[in-house]
Length: 270
Image (cartoon, rainbow, N blue to C red; front, side, top):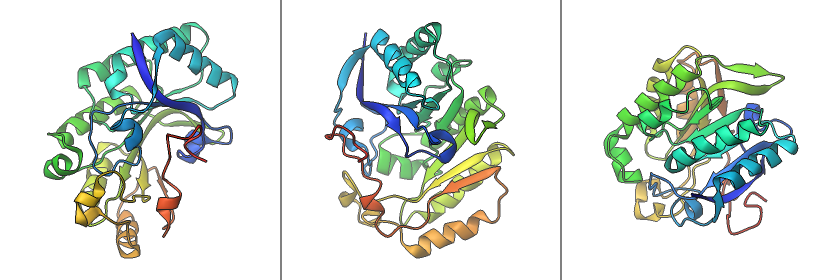
């Protein structure tokens, strides 16, 4: 049984409590169950760039990353490989893997399979993208995103109800991400409302680095980066809420030059 992986190594681009000073031991999987028309990782999510590895090989990769003193094992877009990943984690733990496992997902997961991960995942890092199913179908080509994502995130919270942070590094818990799309500010505000309703101890990560990639040119309304007016609108809106913590990026005119990995390179992030 093989798993397709696009890249693995130390990654410093996650939230500070995930990346820390030593980096996150990140594994980017090929393929995705969403088809986001603006995906910054489209080379691997849609074009399936990557190489095949066995379950045992992936377990050994996790252990090798642990030896590099990374803070965690970060599984990026793991949803379509969830059956194999469950086996990999069990094998890796039996061989001595002790650092936290991060499940970094679009939240459009299979709820029953997610329940099977209970006890294996330390940190959930879901992205709650859409509060409107019509927008989800338009931009990501999936149905019932809102309901499926909500049910899955609630299961993640059930499995990891408390955020445990030691020496500025997350050991257990959940961070919910949301990417702000231009000309879709009401979607973001509604997403923030929904995320806030989940729990009193939610950590929110608000991503402002959107830039039009992949097929975004087919949608004029999202064929640009955020503007300062949209950014300030959302920052002001956040003042209405009391999240446990909020991560966000400062407004960056040239975000496209910073958050655009190239998976054709040996290291996509440099």
